[in-house]
Amino acid sequence: MCLRASVKLHDKLFRGLTRARMLFFNTNPSGRILNRFSKDIGCVDAQLPVAMMDCILFFLELIAIITLVAIVNYWLLLPTFIMSLLFYLLRFVYVNTARSIKRVEALSKYIILPSKYPVCF
Image (cartoon, rainbow, N blue to C red; front, side):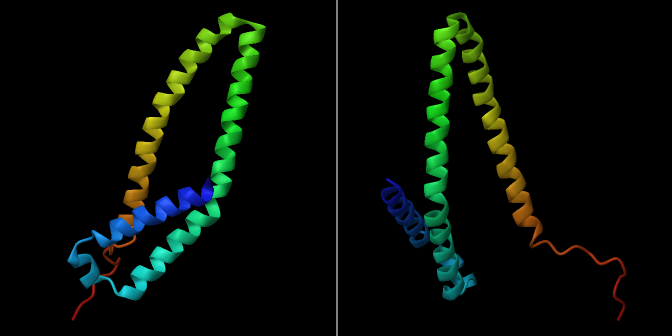
């Protein structure tokens, strides 16, 4: 399963790279593009199995907890459902905020701040 997911991600990354504008290839050397591409694929291959295993274990634990709640007291399924919806909505807020923070962090690497002391010629 991880191998198929890795191959699909590789194909999508390669398709996205080949559909880039010519300006991207003119401004970035081919060595840098190749190094970044291979680094990203290496990260995917290294982190995908761990993330998938965590996801599977999380969902198995979630099913076990909901089953236990349903067996012990089925009236508690209503607050469980409400809290699940609340956490699902909070997930969207977190993902959007994290994405914005990463974007600002990436942009701040390339912004040159003015120096404290002006240069005089």
